Length: 160
Image (cartoon, rainbow, N blue to C red; front, top):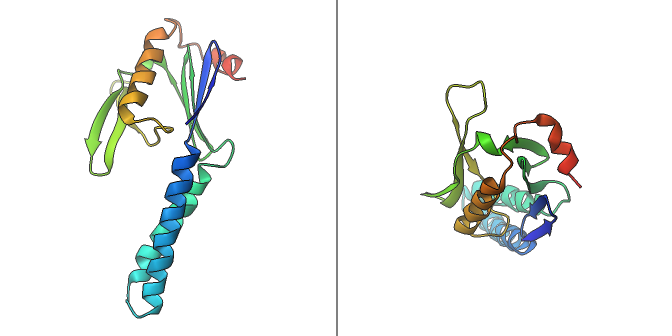
């Protein structure tokens, strides 16, 4: 749960403790599944393979520049596995928390200008915060936003 604060920008990074813990636990269970497979449990390799991929996925959270959430007065950027998505504050709804099968997630509606229907978006990472706290942080920044935040040229000037 690293947060780099500035006057106009806040960058949230994934929690290293959570990432390491999930990677280690996934790897240990994957090893156990492969052991069961070698001992004769026919399809244990399937679960072991998925858990091994999960361990690698959680380790990717520790690679610099792979995951981040950058909040500014103009909008926010979500960086997931080096794929950057930008959202201007006037184009997003209030952030809410919804429970699903895999737990609670932060969700919002994105309604870019020129489109008729908004997109329903879930944030896959809460960057070490509880989902309710993450929604609270995002809503505070949304209220702090400048009314003219749709100008696309302002994005790079906020990045440090």
